[in-house]
Image (cartoon, rainbow, N blue to C red; front, side):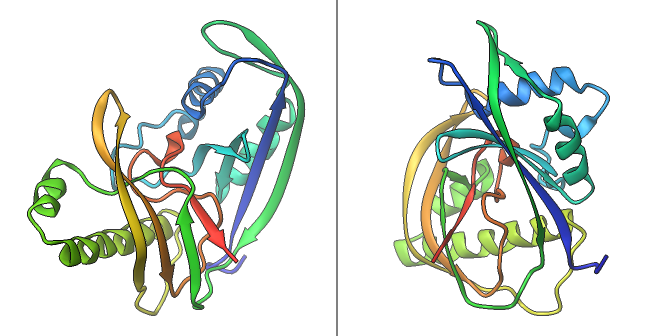
Length: 217
């Protein structure tokens, strides 16, 4: 396979339940179910590791995404899943939709937004960010976003021979809680010169459903 192409499998889960199951609960269940496959339960707070299995909420459905070598793993394991278990109950799955695709990064102007809060800043970066004026804050976030894209590509073993650029069109900050700590999360509309696979995450806590990228038409 071309070294700039990777396989992606997206598993969309339907189930009958009044309970609002979160991506974090789904991660916990699958991590326990597949303890022998570390990528299902990796602790991805290490910024040098881009998680190749990610848990999402897409169009109100829970989803699991497998990237690269883990696309086939997700396809195989999710094909045989018939229920999930939370602390409170066992929930039967009514349908699993498996979508296979190939990602190939193209150098073309593309528009995006975050479907879930983007956790861009650690404590050190937040201190620097908070001391900047508004215009410089935007540029600071743009540099971090470029770094996040490069980390994603590196995690997928993809290397491009051109400079990646980002322009944040608009953004707002909200306070979110992850790992029992409070972080600044951002919702942004932004442009870049590279295609990014939809619903793959950027930033911190990607595997738990933060920083999901939505492609704007």
